[in-house]
Image 1 (cartoon, rainbow, N blue to C red):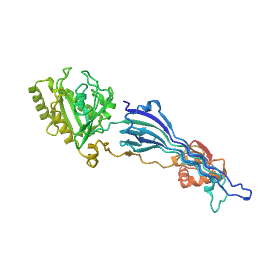
Image 2 (image 1 turned 180 degrees about the vertical axis):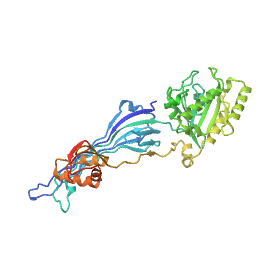
Image 3 (image 1 turned 180 degrees about the horizontal axis):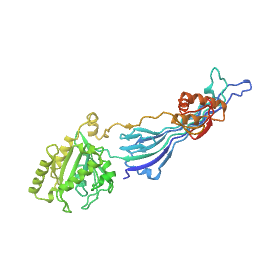
Image 4 (image 1 turned 45 degrees about the vertical axis):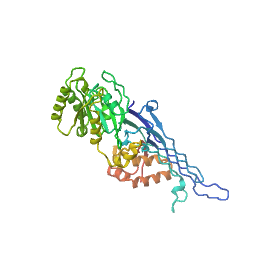
Length: 433
């Protein structure tokens, strides 16, 4: 199971607008008829329930959408480039490294635009005005957005089983659900998270067997970060503690190790409700089992139920099943779909969340030498990229747009004089507003 991937996405560029005039024999002075360029295709992630991991990105880490078509004469517009849809499994969190936007895709069918296609350029017919009847310039299409994406899969589970390797989590999951994890008498039997469904009649719970954590997991030891990430979405944690560790270690110290790693990774995990399961009760005497349960209950208080279980004799499993169904909160969406889920329908999950930093549209100007200035800002860069600076009409129109965008004001505040060299987006030209 591949939980992480890093891919590069590039949206399609917009098509160029057309510079054209009508040339019919019976129209000696035909007007402008250049069509607009089409918009470039965007890159869209689509939550697809047929995928379970990010393995398919290992073979293809680069994705590029198609560009928009160029405009043509006779007012023919270029076709928009089709969006490129990339499937990801439910539970995928996506970081757009270019701008810091985070998408959280959890429900099949949810869509997230991660790279917007470039806008198409306008043909010369769009610049006709009452004072300018024959514009002899058009716009170029803008390039599409591009960025690296960091994808992380976090399991969508109601309950997470945590504990040291070989604590008995896999056996417990197999008895509670229909899951069939590998079970053996040595550490690290489970090397990837495994899901199982607990059927409670009118309600179902998804339980995740998180691979055994080790000391230092919160700092990345072993595969700690990979495994701990899956705990974040759970609504209840079941800490499985071996009553009779094969290595002779102290159960109390083992408990503290796991709790420390959870809190070090994310302090929010400390606030999640807990159940402590003392596993492998069949390996010690009933008197020792009861004494251990009483000690742990006194230590943790009434808020944390302590349940002793045995996957071999099945003791304590009914009590644990009832406690899980009781303690996992029933959300409003659960109530609406309880009947559907009991009938085998799909689980209702939280909505797609997007965390997007505020857009930065300011323009700055600074002097870099005698009569030389550099202007920075996305608005200014896009404007310069749209026009042919060798075309006097286009340059005059660009200067008006730069003034409206606040570029001229920023240059004047930096000491600019008409005729000085100005660099915008890597292009240097004389600016005489």
